[in-house]
Length: 160
View 1 (cartoon, helix red, strand yellow):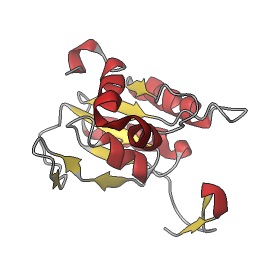
View 2 (view 1 turned 180 degrees about the vertical axis):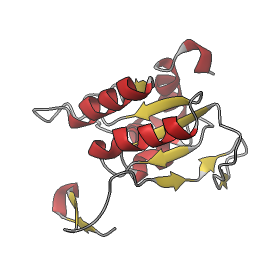
View 3 (view 1 turned 135 degrees about the vertical axis):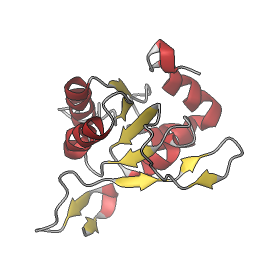
View 4 (view 1 turned 45 degrees about the horizontal axis):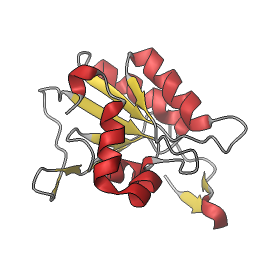
């Protein structure tokens, strides 16, 4: 898959690139602060976090000790969530969506919500309306505040 990066942060896949159902696993942050490669096995994790973008996945991996994968597009969140639900039916799926409130249509929120509804997952969004993704939120507010805000949006049985 090839991506074209344009000024202003816009990204486009090259024509003919295949994205549907593709995802990028991210190193999971460990309790000692060093990244650990995510090596899924047959035992389902308690939860999996699915993000829209790779930078968001890296930031979120520091907020919660669950495996994190980047769907690489808001429109691919549902495809990736369905694939993981099929693999691990009992696993908690967390959709860490972008909060694109500056757009006429909040693409991140709409796609994360649609994916969560299909797989009975939950949506967590950055609460600052000027910072659209968890990477921006994390860089602005730091790890402690970001972790609190992220965990407050999880179901009670997943909060830490």
